[in-house]
Length: 108
Image 1 (cartoon, one colour):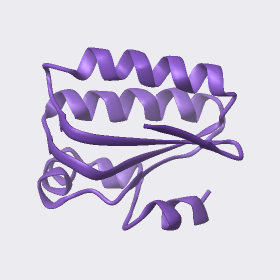
Image 2 (cartoon, rainbow, N blue to C red):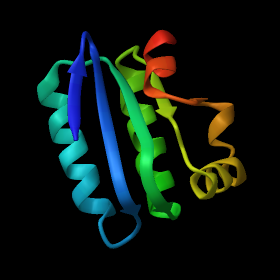
Image 3 (cartoon, one colour):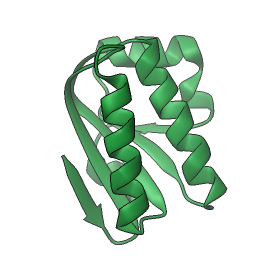
Image 4 (cartoon, rainbow, N blue to C red):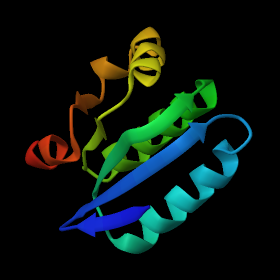
């Protein structure tokens, strides 16, 4: 789901983010972000059950786009499996990871 709050687009993903659906999700996310006029992006992973390296590619790609616009990218409420894969990739060193969407909004 997509929700615009001020100059921030909050994207809530559920289910799985893997090579089977990554291209579709990336295209829809980019389309919505570009048409929203948002500068910042919050990826809400509260209901995301599984993510593989394709998901990491989506995160890094959106981070680069948002950073080029001078905005912030944050990840909210990842589950244990998602936290592990992000930690292995070092995502937390470049993107803030928060415990909730509200916390992420507070860091914008």
